[in-house]
Image 1 (cartoon, helix red, strand yellow):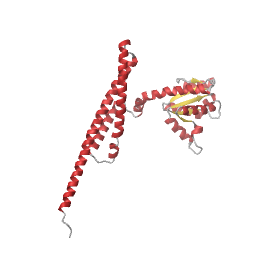
Image 2 (cartoon, helix red, strand yellow):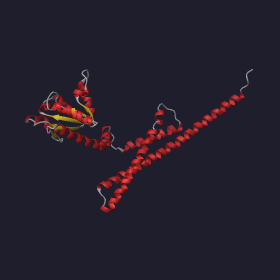
Image 3 (tube, one colour):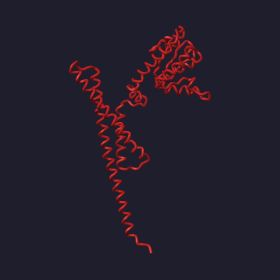
Image 4 (cartoon, helix red, strand yellow):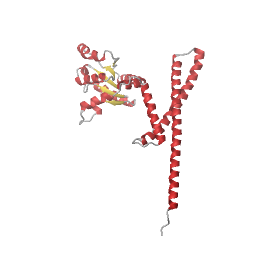
Length: 283
């Protein structure tokens, strides 16, 4: 995940924990942005901070009385909230009553926040665990989120556009239609075949798991997990069938195109040979 660390510079333990957390999350293979290590002196830093927040998947807010008094820290949190970013607050100390009412509650009251223990390793591990869970949920909500961003109300529209595009690609390649992106369309076939093979393998895997769940259901009755597995299995099988049939279309159309090319070359060779035979020998 791409993580933005929001904290008050030069104020401890906030600053020390931000440095520790950055190293910890990088070791967990996350992409991490922290202003002090992620920027160079000549950069337009305000724009860079905004860009990084807009790109991040989650913002970890290291919250203290000092950070709640910092306009920059609060602006970063507000920008993340406006753009519906996942915000993970970790509260480093008891918050002053006035700050809690004026700045903390409006931003974090409806957000699940974590209370720091003072053990950097334990606290960093707790945040890393949340990010791991979030990474799984990202895939679940990705389609709906992207569709909403682009104003697409029905995600099935994407499949219709995809199938129409593939149909156009198939016909263009098979018929040898010449247009500016012929090479790109021809290049679709190899990657798509690889995807189809991968989905077929997943289909076989889910089918075997489905059989196992059916056997368990006969003994113990159907469980929620077995019903969910059956749901996935049916859809993987359907997707694998669609892709395998599409591959069959590509293969047939490719064979037709290759045959046409061979016939065209043969005609040109015969024409050239006949032209050579009719030429009179030079004196």
